Image (cartoon, rainbow, N blue to C red; front, side, top):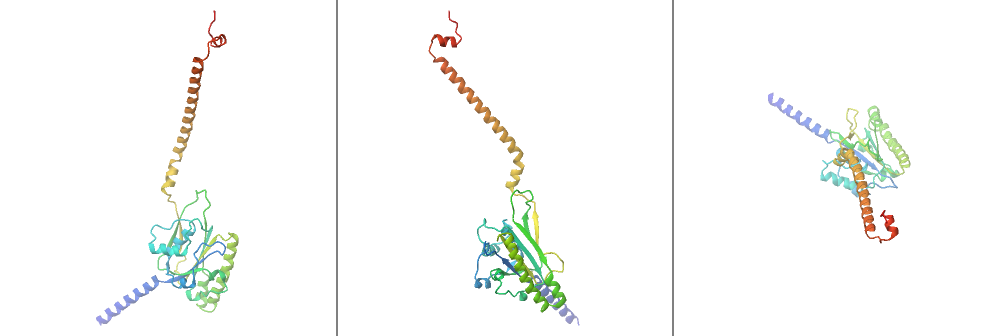
Length: 289
């Protein structure tokens, strides 16, 4: 009896571990939508799409950071950097003015049936995403005090597919909802392209098994840490003003002194070398008897 109890307990533990592993390795799909007029992503063939490795959530966050014009996290591995190199164009000065990132909850991979006539999704960069149990952060520097014009990040979550699946199941109405969503998001992205004049990239993350909480899988975090160069400029700005004022004053003093010295030397030279005539003697205030 004890042997059967211990065996059942071991089987229960193994089954629980397998369930946790399957949950941790849950996958989704991601689409990177590029502009037809301004290409920011690499062009790939259909064979390359089939051979593409899956992406992790931190890699997706790093790709969004690079699209916004910022450096990826320093903890990014070499394999992840290689994936970003396959996804993004290598020109750092060719970056979009905006990134539209939307997380769609409840849509599974089997429901994402892209219409071949849909040009936007046909040329999109599609890949599987290993979601796991952890969330990823998109770390962006705080640019509130910057005088430049940083790129815009438009984020959102859509729970309509999840609600349809909970009400009607994964087939039928839910599948029609996915097809309607793909058509609608195509129209929305076309409008965004017209508004931003093609300078926008779309990122659609489809999560078939969303977490029970309402938090997003990709969180945007603004860091207030400034670089050493920015800190040096901020700390040294008052001293730099004082140094500039002192430099201007010293320059004016030297120029004035040089002019006076040259004038004095010229006066002495002409005074010593002038001819001794009556007029020059009178000019020199010499008393003539």
